Image (cartoon, rainbow, N blue to C red):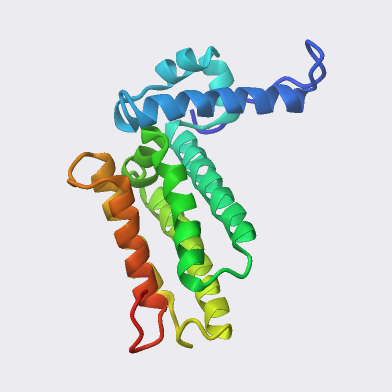
Length: 218
C-alpha cells in the first residue's frame, strides 16, 4: 500500500465528508495514544489492532494514513502541540512577575501537562526515538521550537535586565536535553525523586542559564 485510499464524499448521517474524516482521524489518534503510549507500544502495534481499537476498518485507516509511521508522526505533533498550548497559556498568565517566578510557573505548566498521563511521556520521549530518518527530523524540528521559545523568553528577560545579553541557543538545547532525560527517567521509575524535586532541579538549571554572570538563583 503506497498511498491513502480516497475517502467518500458528500453528507452522511448529518455530517459532511470533512466532519466524518476529522472524526475518523481523531478516533485513530485516540486509539494510537493508548496502543503506542501503553501496550503494546508503537513497534509491536499493527494496523489491524489499531483499527479495531478505534472501532474502524483497515480500509478507513488507509483513507487517513499510509502506515503506522504516519500515525505516530501525527500523534507526536499533537502531543507536543498540547504541551505548547499549556506553556503559552502559562506565559500569558505570568505577566510581569520576576524571572524566577516566571520560569517556575511556565516550566511547571509544561511538566504538569506531560507527566499527567504516562502515555504522553512515552510518546514524547520514548516511542519517537530511532523510528526513521523522517521522524528523527520531525523530532529535532519540534525540539527546535522549544529551543526557540526558551531563547525568546531569555531575550525578553535580558531586555528587562533580568538575564544576560547573549546567544542562548546552545544553553537552551542543553537544557532541553536535561528535560527529556530527567522526565523520561522519572516516568520510568529510574529516578528516586518526586516530580516536584525533578521540576525544582530543572528550574534551577534554567535559572542558572538565564541569570547574568556572577548572579545566583534566589
